[in-house]
Length: 447
Image (cartoon, rainbow, N blue to C red; front, side, top):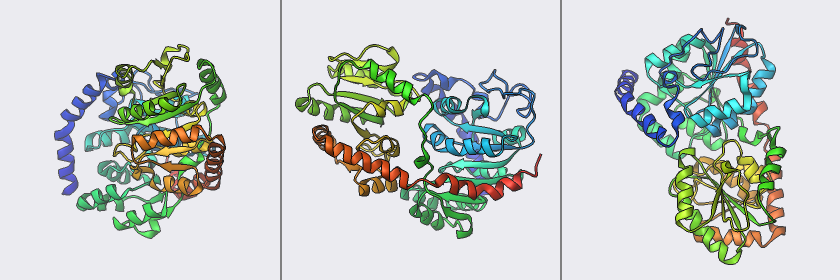
């Protein structure tokens, strides 16, 4: 009964969801595209035979090839797509005869999967979590295995996937204290959903403990580690880094503020102005988290009298340029690689911090604000290793940036500590793979 009420509520909210898509499209027009996919509709032939390009599907290498089994991987946006990438590669290597459909909910997530895998996978938007859309999606692909990345848990998606005979696995699962309390408040809905999941691979022991609080049994729960430790540099990384470095005239100290959220850019710019008083030639690379905020961030820089160059313009970054705005997609690692110090956003506002492992893996000293609940364990691990420092506000951020830029020995020490920590904590891919082996063998009997 609870799930039926949830389904009814979702139907009633559909107009608001589409209104939200329209609103977001005012700044990111791609939100206007492929709405039918969100309702579970696919034009053209069934995906087992032909992936239509008319609504954004990619084609297989052999267009007419029919896959006996489909695996559905749901990675909501860019971060989850990057985390899932090593596992998707392993699935392609181990089961090349199976089709893989990867869903996301954002255009940036969709673009990231296409950039990573091209025509090796089918990429579509995930259906909204109401009965009709989910059933239509499952009817089109008939996946034998559903892999949910991190904590993308939706009642109808999981219920109807199980009802269709698919195994459901959650990999790289994380559950903050805040999210755990939220699920506890809706226990009548969340407990049956969690009981339907075959197995969960948690990132940390703390995540596993919180899942147990929600009723997940030990037999269906294991700690596999964080797939984001398995990060691999893209094949064109050296080329992108060289092109970006060539865009910057002269040799200047570079500080990157990456994945900043709404309300955080202004704080970063205040910190940057304090830094300029001590380091007049400092260059800031500012990379907002969401593309629809690129224009607003550029305007904010201009309003503060800071000369800004956007990456997309291709213009040279002269000594007078104060800010390089990272308004391109898929280049965050290149931005990190030309920087001396990294601040990871989402942490000076209460959104829980973004991925701190990427700059650490590239040998950068890492700074964060106090809000770190999305990457709490990773932050603690890097902080214990000597790679990461936490700051309370923009003044403290500026002080740390100035100190580190003036101390190359400390930067090198912190950078090495981060790379060593990343290397020591690899292994999540293999553990996650073992977790789903039984589900894979069971799925292999379906056609």
